Image (cartoon, rainbow, N blue to C red; front, side, top):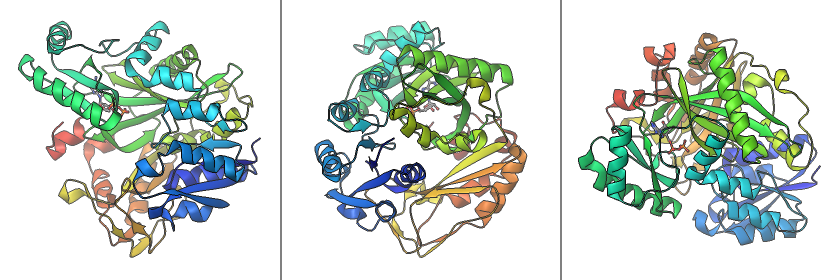
Length: 449
Ligand code: ADP
């Protein structure tokens, strides 16, 4: 096992990774920007190093400095968390090439193969996994898009090759919209992901977003830990995630899980990953693979009892997965609420500020992944997440009842938060019955879908 792990991240996920390290007897190294001198993850770590000014591009994304710090600190592994450098195959390759330092993540080659969405689609097709009808090559021009529009039937989605979180994705409802949509998808792809390649998919009007957590070791074992349902989205960004999905029956659950396993096996994947699908009318379609630990991994941990981050470290250290597929059991229900410093009444605009009151809920069924305390400043330099509230119960109804109690006793002053919004959702019949699809919230809020 490793002696010392550098966590190339901040906030709750940095602390989550360090907690796993601590339990394995591994020392922890934090990195921080000028804006994060007093941040929770710095406090938590055994040692911490400044890696530059507040802008992420000059600190948390500075590959060279981060590898240098790992070297200087005597760390023998780097865990990237999510976001920042987590899905950067070049960074993974750089770490792999550094003597004495192990990358806690999938092999850079597998990251590259699956990171390009059109490549990933090709791999999945080779593994007999159904994919959303669409192209396996980037499209050349608007004429090609129009031809595809005729072939699949409108609506279609033009998606940035490097996209994610709905960024770089444009929905096209008719031929007349193709030119503008193509241009803005390319523009967003370039701006956010430094890649203006785009491809085309059939756009499903009202699907469920179902994703499967996988774990794979270097000895050929691939397991899936069941699914998460992330259908509650606002403008294609996840708002609430839960496990298991209220929309799957056992047969479909097994089928999707096995498809995910097949797919990552085909890609030569190891470590933790997520295979995302859209599900509509009992059919499932592969969408993409996320080659990192995800924000919402927590709900899977709660219902399986499997510590995914701990396994990331163990697998990276060369250990074999110590459980069979048949050993994975889903017990109870868990929901994750993203607690963001945003104002739901003002189009969810971020509201940076000081947490003058911060009193999170406690007691049975409540897990809190956060890295803040009362008096802390939620800055405007990074994402607006304060923390994640994860509530577990015997079944979905029980879990939602508990969630009401937990959210009612979550006191935050000084910034607006998403807490009141979550509380409203718990009274929303469509959510409570589990009938919501990915476009439900936008229709309710009358937003741009
Ligand atoms: P990510 O899952 O990494 O956020 P995307 O930007 O590809 O990446 O997708 C975000 C969301 O957009 C999905 O969860 C889903 O709700 C929606 N979406 C993506 N592709 C399609 C599609 N072809 N049809 C319908 N909805 C889609």
